[in-house]
Image (cartoon, rainbow, N blue to C red; front, side, top):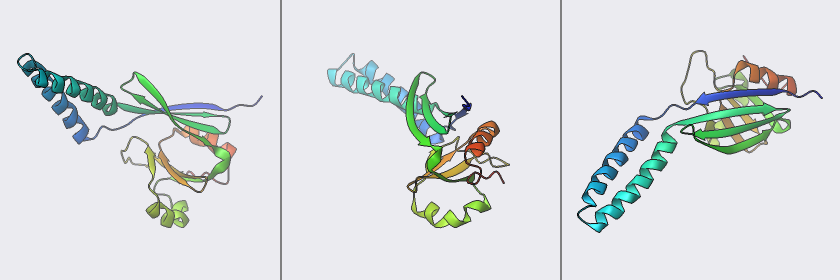
Length: 166
């Protein structure tokens, strides 16, 4: 049995507006709960704001885990280091091309890159050298992710003519 297993964890950069929204919802929830001791309506609004603050908190601290097992790549979203959700699973047999984000190998796909909205499972940070990769899957999806070098090599052994490292 010849199975390949590679795992990679990437922390997503939290945007400034999400940090501000988190602080704002917590402050408003606290104010309305305190005011809730005076009126019932303020208490109901305070409880709703507490629920909203919880969901904003979960979405502020995101991590993506890539798991490559025997020609299948699965992406999990980990929210606040407490909840895990399977986001997508990709069969590498349906992979069209995989290359770094600014690679010249993607020049033939520029038209499709502008038309289609890319699904981003990366940290969202541009680094030098570029560590984010893009792959086109099944003619329908454009996926951006940030694998480790070990994962790129494992995918390259499964599809050597479709994976480029520039």
